[in-house]
Length: 248
Ligand SMILES: Nc1ncnc2c1ncn2[C@@H]1O[C@H](COP(=O)(O)OP(=O)(O)OP(=O)(O)O)[C@@H](O)[C@H]1O
Ligand SMILES: [Mg+2]
Image (cartoon, rainbow, N blue to C red):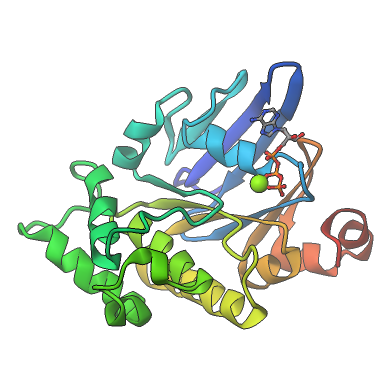
């Protein structure tokens, strides 16, 4: 183990819905400045994991640490202030508002002192940064978000999450329903963000092949249990595991 605490340390996390146990004592950690893929089939518990981590769903047991700080049970609305941003599945945007208005909403959850600039006027700087990272959004800044393509919408929800200046980004199936070329583009963007900004990312995907091509590490869930936790290249080369759990 390195001296600095992991971006995220999850220990013995259990969660469920009524009689259903969706997560069984899940334990893993996500390194700082790394992309950790969480892989698994339909119903494996990936979304439940992200929702429990970000405080949208209550854990039944276990603990979560963010950069060494205990955040178990912290409600979702406080998580942004602690540096965690969650991009849920489904690419929800406010369709009637413009791209820029949607982006500005992302800055509302920002915490005090979390990667804050010294100078004022942060909103404008962050918008400039978002447009530099996602030029396609700059071109469409006045357009209603409802008119964007699926790939553009995925970029908008990513950019909106970054407006809160997170240190840890949770992404739920960003590739779902997008053409392979667009998926590659979005994953390359995530990779660049990690390299340039030192962001840590937990990337939930059913698309294991693509996810492992950008991830440093991979955690595989099956029916709510961790069945593998390895470097991404090791997982990608493990034929037995790929066939059993990853579908490629
Ligand atoms: N709101 C809910 N009420 C009851 N059971 C639920 C609810 N949400 C999820 N589940 C159950 O919990 C388990 C894990 O579901 P979850 O959505 O976390 O899986 P997932 O890995 O994200 O799947 P997918 O790849 O389809 O998105 C499944 O058995 C699912 O049926
Ligand atoms: Mg899901």
